[in-house]
Length: 54
Image 1 (tube, rainbow, N blue to C red):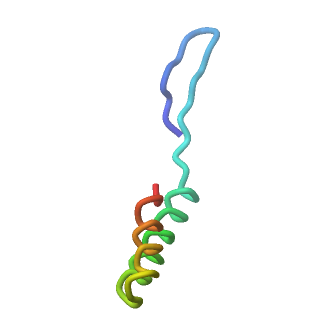
Image 2: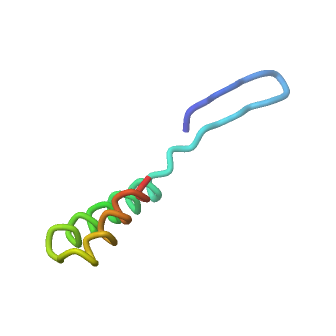
């Protein structure tokens, strides 16, 4: 966790979301494989998966 703001009455933290990064990486990798393996109609789905990966 990273401290963003610290005052006497307020503490704001930022959490690094490892699960979201892993899910995004898996989505992008899945999209890349779909893009490489399949032809025109399905490779658009692969591009979509790559585009939505955070």
